[in-house]
Image: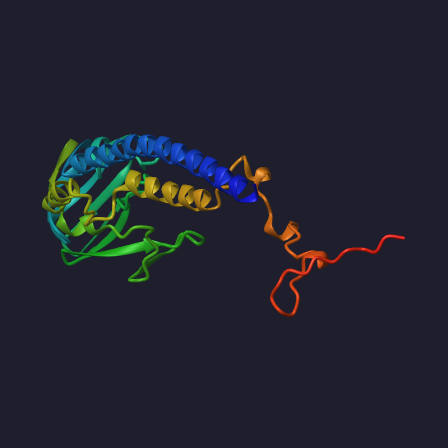
Length: 248
């Protein structure tokens, strides 16, 4: 009887767990594809930069190498995979370039590693980072949540005569877009898949601690008296010795 109860309870639990896993898998596949396609869209937008703003001068940039004389601030357009202006982007991202020194800052708080601060010395851009507490800038002591690798693969030209524009192309982002279809993320900017994987890890931990609602039916071995009554104890010769209580 006890064995039958155990088997029945185990079968119910396995059936219930199978149903949960099946439903979980269907929703999981749908959520995965949604996150996957959002990242592919973002990777496609990363390839080109087209912005409009105001300023004066002209500048050409290839990777971290800059040439030109420019003062420019953009007000609208597409840059770093995001449309400007948006709440997480500093709409006025300044470019100041001279022969000797220059500064370029781009704030994008979308969480995809597109924010960067650079200082140009004699045409060579050097990345800086901002201390989140003091807001002081420092070289080589990077506080970027995700390091902006795409900065070193950017090619762009900026021209402004009152009104101005920025046109850019990033071959590194193009490679990241193409390779990204295989889920390889060379620029570490697949935000939605990263969030999905973290959520699935949490769900997996919760599933591991799964308890069936039928758990109260489980027969606890520790609560069963498995000892043999004295009257059925075997005798020394191996034969069952039934002890009887003498009647008065």
